[in-house]
Length: 282
Ligand SMILES: [Fe+2]
Image (cartoon, rainbow, N blue to C red; front, side):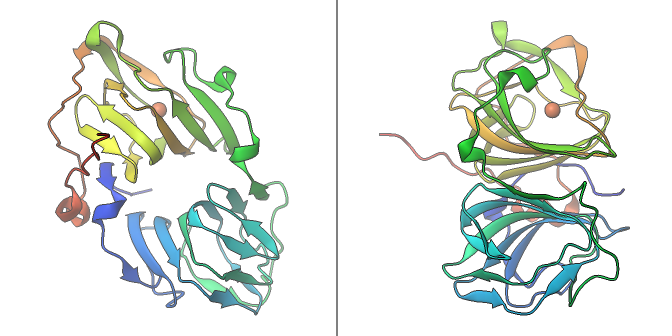
């Protein structure tokens, strides 16, 4: 497991590349958010052009997890609209796929992103399959949030791995969530936390203001924060290498609404590390 700590980059700043990272699917465009140079697992924004289609069966020899950011994609006759989600385990058969109007997906590959024709040699593990989740049909559940976190936040669960406890979910905050007395301890996790800001703003007191399109690969035991939000936010969150656990420091650190923009990025992403401006609402 060797993806570098990335906290945070605005996906809008990263240029599109032809094909998936690794060279497969030359008829799509992608933005590489993070990649493991040992096992080739990656998180990519994948853009399927209007009219894209696969009429022949395909499979992957690794898991594919995705959340639709824009447009819609159809796989095996099932339509995935904006913000719908799937976890398609290794070996799962894709009989057909198409994106008549185009689609943009946040896609997590658990190994090389190499689609191969035909059926897999081994069938997929049905315990891992999450074929379709539509968060727009779900209620936000505040009861699923760690009680150490401030009130007002809530979760829509997407998946929990039955073997590892790794979990993916949407996490929302209402606006005007302010650390009490403008100070709070920093916190971290014993696992990796991956974040993608679907909408709103997430203010890191130590890193800057992450806006929609902001992405993190938050490595284990790296402290950040304190955090707050003026607008509220809707985040996609995934834990890697274990279930979600929050560890809080004891010392309170001051919070500011106007932190200096100083993200922590690997060399590859440093050219794209600029802030993304907020549109005025007047
Ligand atoms: Fe967290």
